[in-house]
Length: 121
Image (cartoon, rainbow, N blue to C red; front, side):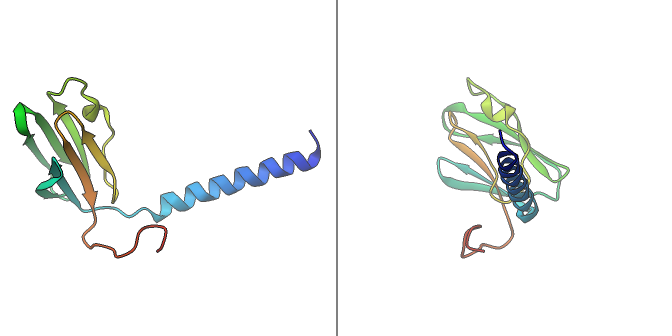
């Protein structure tokens, strides 16, 4: 490898780090947890208040939603795979936790709706 190759690798690495930093800085903290069952909004909670509630879907599906310290997570579920329980806590606008067997989506939203997406801002 020549000196120019190392410089090119360094520039690409620096650009990737700068992009990652920009993405982390531009994320907005959400303030509402919205629960959808089978595509229909069924509940809306504040991220600022600690809460433990049970989400019941059709055919006996149960998920336990826990809101604590400004983060939301699914802490228990009676679905066969339990993947929703293993997803990390969410707190930023647009993040979701999905339980496919129960058709439950937990989404973080900000207070105001934007007319443009994150790229067009």
